[in-house]
Length: 350
Image 1: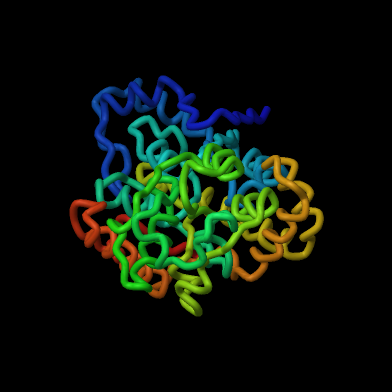
Image 2: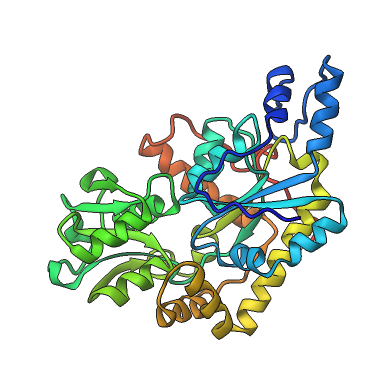
């Protein structure tokens, strides 16, 4: 039987793993559970290894489609696994769950920033595939009655953003483009759902940086002025610079590469289904995410501009390095990371 758990940042993994984590060290990157003198704990860990927990969030449409269609659950069941789903509000929270010693989730997906922060903190998260950036997938915008019409006018203003997300990089890049620094604005760190409600009311912040479908929902709620998006900030480099990533827990991946391939195959299948059935996808996603159909359809069609789920190659890693370097310069992360460190990414066979 498949259990679906929709509680945000769920930590429902078995107590068995807590016993194992206490008894055995977990090694970074491609390390597996270290040799353990407690034979009983090792046997229990093996038994519990037949559950795969996947984290998902608003914005990762293909992974959400995979969840709803149920085909992946059926395929993994054939391989002897039970699949569970866990909803998160941000990539940073999901990364924390995947890097926990108890492996609260084994697989997830979200913006690059969350995994950059994880690598800087030496947390065992391994990127396994990239999602090419969407032309208008992220945007910085303001209510049209604010009087703000350009990024340069954001100097000294309050800008809402979800901490630890790609949108922090979007803001920093857009500001740099017009000769401003991140320190020239006042970041307002806020959860996406809270930000949408505040944006509709007005007054709590001057601009908002977020991703679709939230951008489309904001536009549908009130007259909105887009100040910048992926295409105006990075142009032809949007695919790499605005990329999101699927990732796996570093202690889980080495012995579950086949299962990881199965998950990625299902996601690629969902990519194609969304492109071939945009109206059906928009209806499904608008229901799941409690969004209006028309904005969701616009989002789905925009997503079609993406190249979908791709193996991680040097072009993605170079863009990843640029993002990490900017966060180092801003002193958001304490030390420079190496995007090409193979402990933190994996090239699938497809």
